[in-house]
Image (cartoon, rainbow, N blue to C red; front, side, top):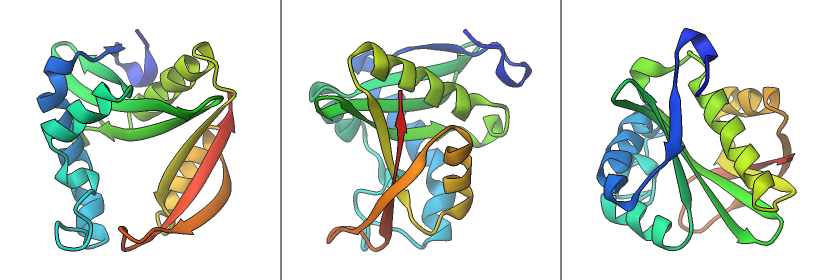
Length: 167
């Protein structure tokens, strides 16, 4: 539990049965990013704004841990953590419902995910973001992340900026 932003968020690990709710939250939360960068099924079919229950279930089945944040009984945020390489955990699908933004929930979720990464033996946490999302980069920098490189991936219509933090 946390007192960030005056809220008493309850954060817990998700179960597979919650994959549909997680997918709906992720799709909603990333809708504004999709509109801003004109991302759609035709040019970026894997964008989180197009998230499905099946994709969340597949990720969880492959080892992604999803943390969920609630305000009362309402799902307000989530973050995924996976460890594809020993010692490095990847943050993914950080999503906060639009009505719950700017209340400290994203910061709380990233903090909980980084703590979990440390407990499972990761020395570093990494995330990839749209390189042109400068305000998001600045936000991650306030959390202790630093840029480590960029990449152009064949399946994405934008450059990816990778940020990393020691945990």
